[in-house]
Image 1 (cartoon, helix red, strand yellow):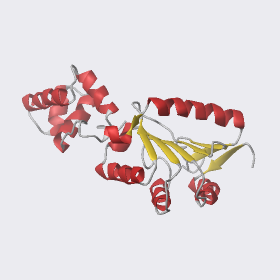
Image 2: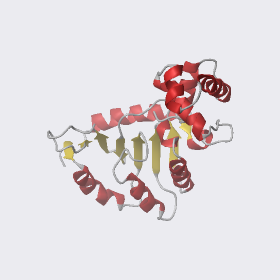
Image 3: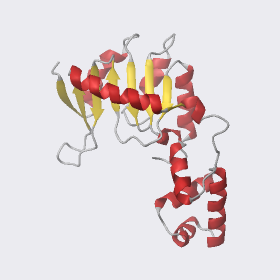
Image 4: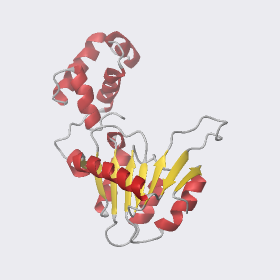
Length: 221
């Protein structure tokens, strides 16, 4: 295999990955924004979990992965099957795979049509210097990330659906008047809900509330 290869589209990606997924002792390291950063990632995780024994995998996610209860449940199941999962404090915009620390695959943004027919491209590299350097960066991010269990602990603030909408409006940069109108509530009610959020998030300011919410995965980052 060439040491650097461009894969165009999901079919080419999985043609390369599928033989590796059939091995029981391959170590997988996955950096992703959420469970859908990689095509077929959910099904691949389910297939891996069907095998017996611990799964040699580490997964580092953006806080965005915690925004949906179904995704949180999927993460719990993955952790119960031996996968090590941690959450970063900052959003992750692109995904990275490391396979046995010898091969690395990077996602690229969706390319506007017609340049590549709208297909996502992936860069696959087996160049030791590139893989080792990127893996060192991953390791540093992994060490500073928070274990999934800590994020899902009882101490993590819980907000209801209406509070989540207020939080999204708060972090959108809209004025109070605009946010209240879009949410269909009075200005007084909106400001009261914002004040309640500051207390819930133990934040001294609206800016701090937004930062805290992003760190906890309460809004999609």
